[in-house]
Image (cartoon, rainbow, N blue to C red; front, top):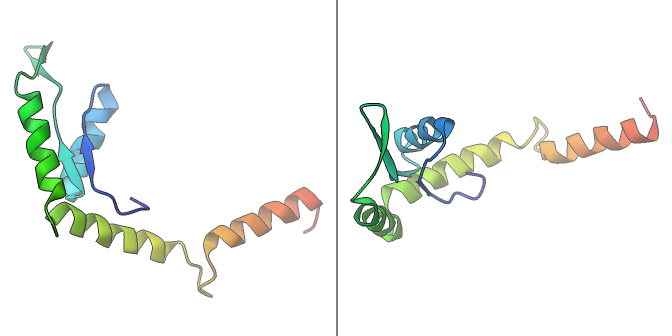
Length: 105
């Protein structure tokens, strides 16, 4: 989300289903199932192509809700990357690493 780009998630492994649901819950993307679990069996989603095309079309619309939400989250993330003195935290981190490498305290 650092770049503010909405996601189309196609989960396959166990934790990916949770992460994909979280993406959809946050409104920053769509979850498209390649497989479904039916009676503890993996079954191919016969509508996958249609579902994917629909998700893609929604993402490509100007000012779509996913883009707006992803941009808002991006701004929040970038705001959190600044320290109290508005100096990017990344620079504080790199300075601390340099001091450790150089043996400074």
